[in-house]
Structures are given as structure tokens and as C-alpha cells.
Amino acid sequence: MSLLKTISALTMLVPVIAFSASPIVCENQAQGNTGTSIWPSIYMQDTNTLCFDVKGWPEFSGTNCVKNGKTAKWTGLVIVWEDGESQGRDSTNFRVVNPVVNDDQIQYRIEWSRGDEWRTMQNVVINRLTGGAVSYFVTEHGGESYQCRTTQKAI
Image (cartoon, rainbow, N blue to C red; front, top):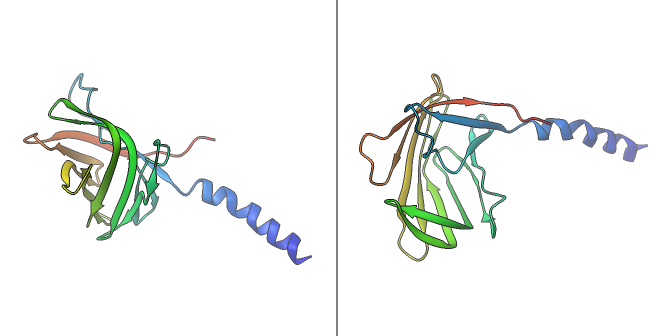
């Protein structure tokens, strides 16, 4: 009888787990500019945990979610572009160190490395109250404006 209760309890939790993530969609506010984005895509695992949608990358390993003031590190096989120039497709390490994830904002910097030297790829600031966001790539001044919102997963 207890096995039946355990199975019943687990089947009740599956829908809760499946719907716990809230994808964040950010749309570029510059007219006609569809060539840039906040990358990789992000989502909230819960109200205090920011995640990066990277688990489907070839050769993915590591941790793709991070809480306020903590660190996430992952590796994947990707093409890295810097200053409009391809750095080639190779296994690349990424990290997010000491981000701000609170009720008012999300702020983080993604860094990448293919050796010992870490290089900043993108700085992102999202106002959680208004959805307004700014993304600064390495060489940009002023950044690009985005409007962000959470969405629900489709079944």
C-alpha cells in the first residue's frame, strides 16, 4: 500500500516540476534589429535561481543555474564571435560569477575561455519590475535595449 502512495505522490509532483521553470523572452527594442540577442537564452528555475538554456549544447557539462552571489560554470561545443569575427567552433568554457538575482533585478556577466584567460562576452541587466533590460557586448558602448517578459512552457 505504501508503494502505491509513493507512486501516487510522485505522479502528482511531475506536473509541478515540469511547470516550475519560467522562460524569459527578451525582445530587442531597436527597430529592425534582429541580429542580436541576450545569449544564451535565460529562464528562472524559481524566484531566486537564474538558469541558462545550454543543456542541449553538444558536449554540455557543468552547472547552468546560479543564485544571487554564487557561480555557474559550464562547457559546450560552440562557435564564439568576437568583434564580428569568428573564433571558430570548439569546446568552450563559460562562467557567470557573483550575479545579482533578487526581486528587483537580474544582473550578470558571462565570460568565456578556451584556456587560462577569461574574456567578458556579455553584460546583462534586467529590471524585474518593468522588464526593461540592457545588454552590453564586449566592445559596445551604451548597450542595446530589450523588453523582457516571462512566458509559460507549452505542453
